[in-house]
Image (cartoon, rainbow, N blue to C red; front, side, top):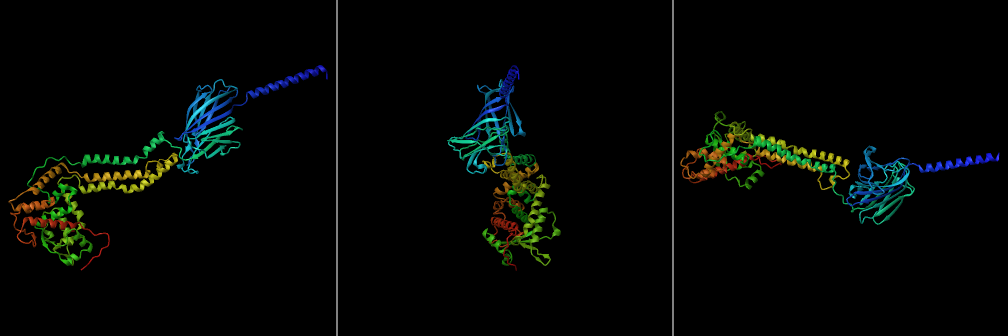
Length: 606
């Protein structure tokens, strides 16, 4: 080859080599975007929050001046599976501490927080930025049922899903004062395998992690540190959901308030008695109302209905439908009562010193002018009388009413109330009103079962939605709250049922008149008229003032009535007779109200 040509060829080769060399250098200068150094400091606070400061040294390739940082919100360390963490960005600054322009968005179906950061003038140069943020929920207390009992731990995905390579990674974790790490783990990859090449160091309450070999793109890394329990003291959550949920857990206690409001409005509209006026002493009963009716109108449910029955029985005797005979008890008849009943009678002072025989004076065909409850009372007495074959005897002892007469009590009570309703004194029969409100209160029994299902459903829902169940706190179990609400509502409805039966305006005026008449019967001193004694005696019995009424006739009423016979010993005395009538009322009330026990008893039959 010609020497001159050879020289030219060598020169061309040299120029080509230099060109390739410069191109290689330029290519190296314009390499892909990467994070050269990833330094992070994680500070665990006693309230369970986690403060993170990331110092990143970034090489941005070409003309690019932005980088994307994804924060994973998935907490795979929660005891019920993956839950969502709360990440709040505090500041993003450059190496001079100046804030950088950022933009936040949701990613990965809401399981990641995407932070886009603009770094001006960063093309083909290394830039340092600082990112500070706070994480709530990354720490877990020992009472959450995790695998390692007696531990508190922190778990955090340090890098998230980074789409650029990381040349060097260093992480330092600062635990609460006094806490000493006893378990440390570094995970990498989607399968959470132990990171190879990672180094760990411990110094007091600090733990350091390093990965000198770096990470390829999309190769995240997570760390977990555990320490003895007792250093975390989480504050009650202030999130809107937790505040709302803690209020919703108490919604069953609105049920009593609703029940009270509804019941009060109904009572105020239809159940309130008219305002009473001043009472004036009256010398005659309300016209056309029976003694039992007036007694029921004055005292309501507070008055024993058996007293009203006794007043009705005496009234029928005075009017000639019955005759009452005082006698000593027949031992054979007494023995037909079961032994337990005899013992109870003796315990209450009813030892059988005196018994009473009720004679039926008029046959049913002559029952004229009787009120409904009076007919029912006569039927109850006749049905309890002994029989001769198919025929009832014309008499019955009061002691024979034991465990027999009670079947007639509801119908007689209903008849007395019907008299008051027919007079317009009540809008509705009081007994039916009370039964209706008792029916309203009855769902409390079903509420027990409902509350169990509700409690299970609510607790399951809360268990799914939160990693900090309120059931573990100071709040009682949700089923208990519902049961409490239902029971309180039932008590409120039952209480209003007692006061709900209201008198009409006419009934209120009649009650005032009856109270004035009761005042007269109970406070009268002397009475000159003998015929008034028997006429008003049934009313005095219904009001419970028969002894006071009898004393007013001590020196006037000196002859025993023809409707009451028996050995009273010595001269007739109105006061003594009043006490005999009281004893009759007590004996009749005891026998009329008695009912068979559900327990088996020993009976002596003759």
